[in-house]
Amino acid sequence: MTAATSGSQSGFAHQSGGRTSSHRSSSPRVVAAYSRRSRTRPSLTRPGKAGPATERREFTIIASGYAVAAFGAALARALLGAVDGLLMPHGVISGFPTVELYRDEWVCVVADDHPDVGDAITLDDLARLPWVVYQRPYDAPAARQLSTLGLEPHVEVSVQSFQLLPTLVAGTRRVALIQRRLAELMAPVARVRVLPCPFEAVPVQEALWWHPVHTQDAAHSWLRETAARVAAGLASGLASGPAG
Image (cartoon, rainbow, N blue to C red):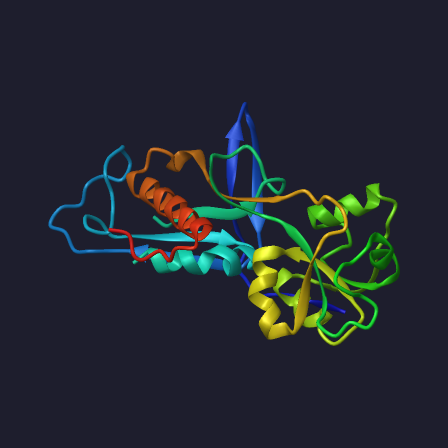
């Protein structure tokens, strides 16, 4: 069984030393715009102060389903040619400028009434229980660590979105690895329990990536500053309103 989220393909290319590399994503897109009428239209190609009080721009950000759920909605609430960015964790792409946003951790989810798992889950449980996985068994970084522990998941279901994992765990004997922020958002709806990993899973470091051509763009700089502010607000538990 395979399930997929809908989305459009986009990406950007980076040329260095006569070679060109590119990254493409079929993830859902988060689009945000800021605007206010102004009598002047300053150039966005040179450094300067930009914001919703002075210019009109639309930003298109490519993000995974997890990033949209954990961060994208808060960023969109803070935001009143398109500039593309990627909300992706480290380890997926490299070689582009980034703004560090937040850290997350991997957890296990099981049905809230799972008959074989108590208050904690063990490596033996992970070895014997059926799994729901993101794409292929070792596509998630934490799942790849299982192979170094000599554990091969018994996969019953694979899906194309982390957001689908809890609903396919609920009411079954299955287990899944998922990011804590997303797990805690989904747990009350999906009726699953969130349990610590029984191994030291590599953390998730989410970042906003962009093409170097936009580094000196004043409006894009405003976007990056807003993303960093929203991330800081999430870390402190504060809600972020529209940026001025």
